[in-house]
Length: 125
Image 1 (cartoon, helix red, strand yellow):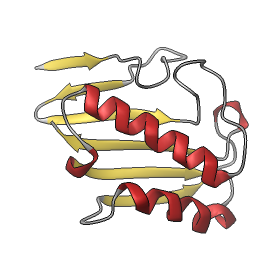
Image 2 (image 1 turned 135 degrees about the vertical axis):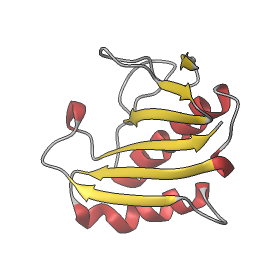
Image 3 (image 1 turned 90 degrees about the vertical axis):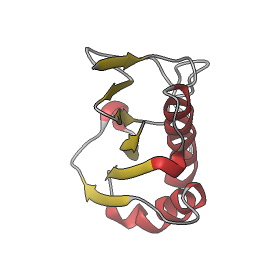
């Protein structure tokens, strides 16, 4: 069973991908960048502000799929600059105050629309 998730609680897909897919008891959420879902515009500011928008997008999508951030099992964080790790991590930790998911964080050469952070996640359905 495979179900495509589409919600206005996260930015519309800007390419040939789904916001999320629910399959075999899991929800796979595509990488989110700091786009405001109401306007589809980038949220300006530092990585802390961008991370907050990204986490709100992820929260909205996972909830629209019938789950919650408490059920997240794995995230992958892509940073334009690993020097921004402390700022990203401080905001990220607010969304996972207890029993955080497994996580990988990597620095990448470039992200869509030249943002500072992108995060994808996998949650239990």
